[in-house]
Image (cartoon, rainbow, N blue to C red; front, top):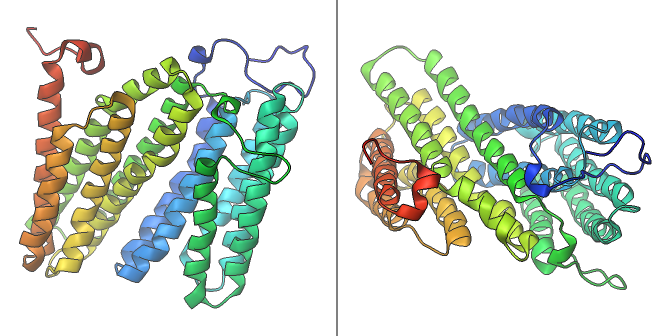
Length: 403
């Protein structure tokens, strides 16, 4: 933490990277994303169609991207300093406006959504340019490149908000493509060159904790959405069964994500020769399917509770089972990137779920969902038993009683 007597420009965290923990200002900032995820799940559940899912995908990717880039900035900045707190509170207010626009972003609130999103991305990056300029000049130059790329994508976001809704979806996905490609391309700018992973000073422990907390927020929103939908339905055995299955799936996703891979990812980055490179792929890209899978599961649970007797179909089975597939694929990516090992439980779980889509396409949607829960349970138990037998994994997973 910066000492009180230091220059006002010195807002960068000091000390051992391994000692960094998430501060209360960062946790307070995360609260706005609870509202954002609730808005998102409502939006998709109300329009449970391919078009609704495609539009919801724009919002999900945008929310993750603005949160993730903020996590990268606060990984180095000290949230106990007043300017950094002011930044986080300003981003919260803009995030509240952006989230409120989600339900009508493809109607009359497109400009509000796009403008607030661009303001968050560009404003935070410009702040980082000045915050790092006297302390970490390489990082400051990196954020200059980041700001230029966000300015470029910002033009596309605003252009998409001004066109007809039929074209808006494609233009906004083009803006996201620009933003998601930029880190992998190393933010090239004519006359300024490219960034390098050495410019990305990173605390692996802090970044792992931040991403873990975002996953927790998504799981928490799933509980809220499920409980709210259940409270609005008439009590019946099938509705209680859906509630129990939804709750079990949430617990299983928590177990699969946090039981082993989370702590391992933190240590892997701290020990890596180029921690920024590992963090980019693990905490920026690999977590996208993890988050998407949790959101899809929440939407499916909310829809099932609202329409418990709805008949099945291949398209509906694909959506209901797609959440667990995407979630397991994301965990597979995270664990492979940090251990160079592909868990067989995840691979076979994905294969079983894909097969389930074909088998249950003609069944009631409820049976597709319950089948997916059974597969998640098998994956969780398999991985737990396997890791419990591996000596080097004992610290990560704990010892079984009697061992």
